[in-house]
Image 1 (cartoon, rainbow, N blue to C red):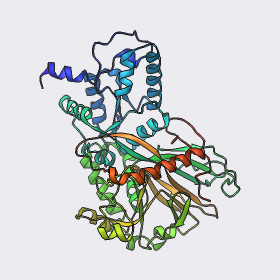
Image 2: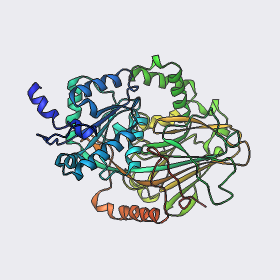
Image 3: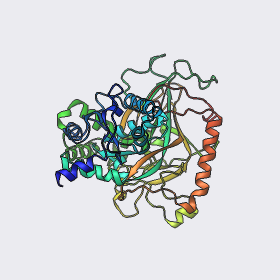
Image 4: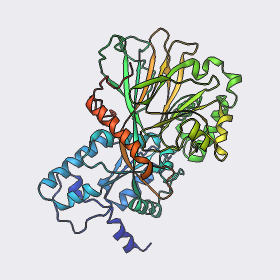
Length: 479
């Protein structure tokens, strides 16, 4: 691309210093950018790519609109940015108003990084929440892939970055559901949680006090947060945990996406994902580890029977899991009619619950119309883990796994998931996610609006805890 033409195009994304830095001298703008962007990059993602992208974006744009997430917290950056915008708007600055109206966010990193930014934008309750584009810089890259941004790590040269920016300019906005998760447990040491327990960044400690004696257990710890792609429990999370543990011990081995995927496949074999029935006792089957209850209609809970062979359960919001596979698939007409299933929509206030026996079962996803064991489509789901033969279970949120201790007494570990609003993302023409169409959206959207009114009336929490601390009410909890 001709340099002069390239420079003119880049002006459409450029934000001047006086908008970014509160103490800068205010200047009259000669150009109003059509797609002003703030860029957040996880410099530790993608081997060396994160650092290289920081340099390229910083050279092409204003370096002050490009942020290294290893050094700067996005909630603080956005809070300062919007505070300055409001001050400038009140003084009559036209550019500040236009930038707020047109602002977009670019986040480069893995699925965990994308989760972080989505949570921050949701928590800050910005006057006009900017849509978010995701650069695939991780191993699985399920979130970027769901919206057409690809799953391969991008180039970090000038041409590649300019090409990505051009896609951001023309991308369409899409609303997707946000899901709220609560984890409650009694720690091994009463009054504090296990120091060896490493929860994902998307879960945050809460000091909530429950009104009932049953829920307000002495020494109970509560963690809460959000996710946008999936929550899973079982063997798939076990392999992911092994991968993350290995990467933490030997980070030098994980410098390239293809190498990472190869190591992941080897660990799946090593952990026995292809022969779970031979290597692991039946006590590891999900049905023997947890009692599952679901909410199909607001406020109405029921038990969900789990087939005894299921060793992984996935609660799915987007049509991409394990590097781009869709566990829900496309239900046949028979399934749509007999089991009252629908295709997976990302904005219908419904989450899909899918089960898998082992990796062999997972291979069916590579076959046309292949899918896992469809268990339910729900508005809320609750896992209650009681004392069993297993002393721990593996869980995962948007690519971040952890090893969850299970009860050794009568106090359960409880995980509850419920719908909590929506967030706006940017999608390319290659987007795999679908939204409910106009003709069928009336009932679904009405249900979501009714649920939202119930949430507001009951003073349900309106934050995931990503940006700051908050308190949670009990009204949405199942009796």
